[in-house]
Length: 313
Image 1 (cartoon, rainbow, N blue to C red):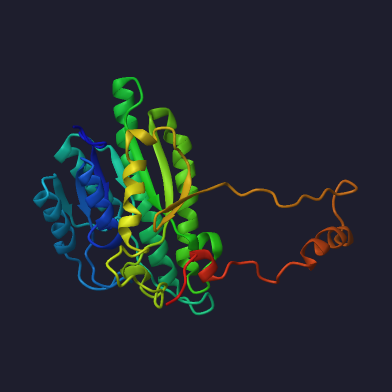
Image 2: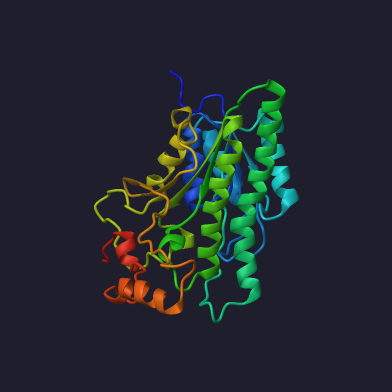
């Protein structure tokens, strides 16, 4: 019996731990040959010496289960290292079919305290890292499509966060990067559709090294049940979006966690006001818009627990 991803090859970035590891294992379980990428730094802020050990460990797990996998030690925020990552997949497996962008770091700080380096480093790893791998994968698929004279198989699954949707006071760099990834995904989806390639983005909720502070105090099950925040709740959606079954899903944003998938619609207009004359006056804007907000809470950003839909232990 064939598996959904039989004959396909995939790259998963940041796959040495947490979400990326679960996604790499899931893609392999579904039949894909996987390039397991991770820079292997021990600090979630991107500190410490790079190490091939995390990526190699996951690749060994896949091979031990009967799958195919190679490890890649590389920093996806570096343009040339991202090129080498895509080239490794093509050289090893003949072509690239699936790209899952997951790599990231955290350097949290309030906006008034954040340094330029803390801003730049998070934007670089998350947003530029997504761009770099997408750029080289897209060029590969476009070239194949031109050579074949028709569409090819290509899937991109990017990783955003509800931090961009609901705000995150101590993460202006992270929230901005994750919002940028959504814009990158929708633009990519439009650009590559004619080549047969889809691009979608997920907002996962999972207990990992990156989110240990966010979920501190949220109870874990003690009766042997799978943690609602386990990365294994997220990876099946990634496997599905990478598969032929998801051919008609493109440019979409999905929230996923604990046995739930929510499809997020694009922003809608909440209210509309027209000028009485050619343009607005200050007084007219005050008369129209101020009453609209008068009875609303001063800050409509969702509280963390409300967004997460979780109860603290």
